Image 1 (spheres, rainbow, N blue to C red):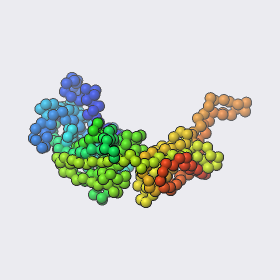
Image 2 (cartoon, rainbow, N blue to C red):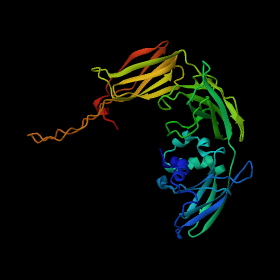
Image 3 (tube, helix red, strand yellow):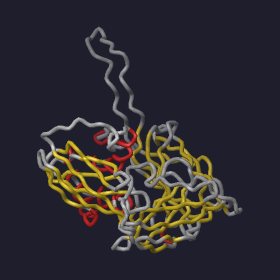
Image 4 (cartoon, rainbow, N blue to C red):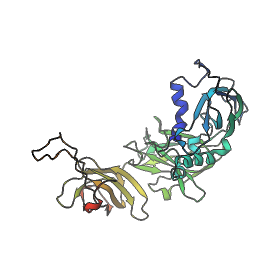
Length: 384
């Protein structure tokens, strides 16, 4: 994942290190520049207090060394960033309750770009209406005026079907795209794309959102985002059947409630083994798909003993897909030089196996599903 993503969290890092505000004395380098300015709240016209201001350098051919600087505004909404390397920068401000970059960017489009420069430029293109440009000169001071725009919010409650609150649920948020697909909100590199969870009463609040049409899925706090069972708005397991809600800047959309069933769910477990001798394979991705349209339900890694477990599955028809299977790599032992002068310490490459799909129907718990995989030919059996 490319370097620009961590810029989204730079304000938190520098706050914890006490390096971004004006309270810590900084030795001024007279050969560098300074950027000062004011941040206002667009809806009130008042100072944006303790907002984070970020400067991002113009992406060049090598975006791995993209210069970035951050500061936090004071009670008067003003900020000052010193020791800025001369150059051309984009600047933006963020504040809780107002539009946030990581909620507005379609990172699916970003990740499709080939190079770091192209990925950075894609983010800038998507966020351009909220960016100010500034040129920083050596020994000079540049003045900036920025504003933050009030974001929309979606609130609701998650409960179990027995009426008790669903506490600690994670969420996946999707925004409808121009081509009528659904883009996941948040950075795909994270274990959970967004950090919000339901509180002790099952309530949740998803804020800082741009205009758009959204749907929400509540995920059980089990494993990772890919592995967790989820129920979407409209109390459905399927994204294609989920209801949606439209919001505009500053809106608060209430009543996005989700109910999670605790009955009628089943567990599927099994093993992935080698067809030649039945030994358990050490590594693979196990992906569960809906049989009708191949929408991904879950994805989990194979355990070290070759087993897998998929709990909390509703009845229905599925496809179990196993990819990237291989044996554990045999590591070299202590170097031993035989009388013949040969070295017996070389590692043995892990054998790779063919992908396989298994259609099946869940009507009750299913234990000990066995999936046997054929080995790839020797010329294809070394991992790339």
